[in-house]
Length: 182
Image (cartoon, rainbow, N blue to C red; front, side, top):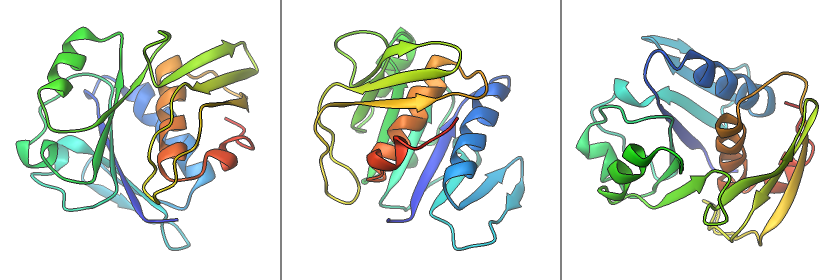
C-alpha cells in the first residue's frame, strides 16, 4: 500500500465527522494523526496520514484524498495539487459548486444513481455500500462496480460511512473493506 494523505475539510463544529472518520481509519490502518496542532504517531510505520485540511498552506503529496464535509477555506495550492482526489456529499449544492470550480477530480457520495458511491441498504447493525462506477485507485488498479457489506457496531452518518469507503477503495483496499467492522 502507498502512503496516503487524508485531508479532512470540515468546519470545527463537524466534530462527529472528524471523530467517526478518525476512529474507523485508525482501527483499520496504521495512522498518523495531525489535529488541533497535535501529532499522534502510530506504533508501526503509517499507512495513512490524517490531517485537518485548513492547517496547511500547501500539500506536496501524490496520493491525497480530501474529504469535504462542507465548504471550508482551503488554500488554493492544495486545491490545484496533482494527485489529489476530492470526496464530496452530492446533496450539498454549495459544496458541489465549490469543488467543480477546482481542478480536483471528485468522487460523489450520496443516494442518487448519479453518485459514484451510494448505499444500497443500511440498518442499525449493517450497511451495504455500492461502488456504482469504476474508479482509479492510487496503485493504478480500477475495481469494477460492486457492493461492500459492512457490519456496524456504532452509529455513523451516511456520508461519513461512504467517505471512509472511498478511502479504502482509493487506497486499493476494497477487498479489505469487506472485513471492516465499523
